Image 1 (cartoon, helix red, strand yellow):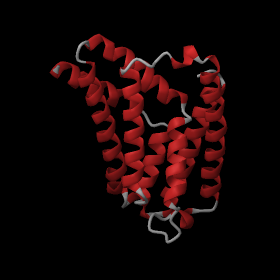
Image 2: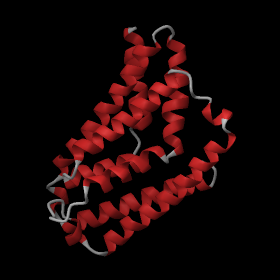
Image 3: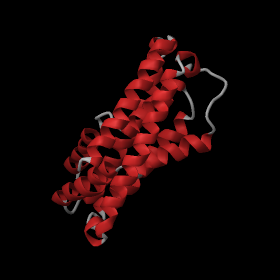
Image 4: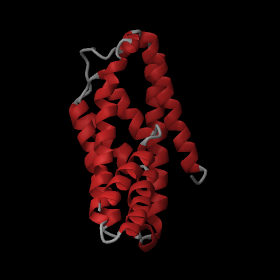
Length: 201
């Protein structure tokens, strides 16, 4: 059981460690110190639900509903293109509009909606959590539960570190130019992921 838990934790970390649309958003919110707790909670809870689905054996959803994968793929492409364009527009407006302590903080509802779409409209999230973690957990029978719980804990620890640890970079992002480059980087990341999905990624 202990080995299953350790491997579950490490597998989850390895799958979500790469910077993607969701991680870039969490990083940006952490740097802005804006609704970090709720954003981390949404990401971690979403992963926990998906990991539970995978461990429970629902990784065959796309096979049972043939159009599901394609629908999620193109929904993700459209959203990522739009969100990336918004980040480029923010960068063009200059660093002054991107200060983390600005008074015009985005409403919590809008931030959480963006976080939910970035999470649930990303086909790679389903591949990583439902399919891969679900299939790997089967190798640790009868300790799939320990594997799944540890994987969910791995996700929670990663997003907590990313969201709340981002403030350590605050001195760097005290300069307006740094925020411009962050927005450009997030925009490029979003569009790169969208291109990958559109080309069959």
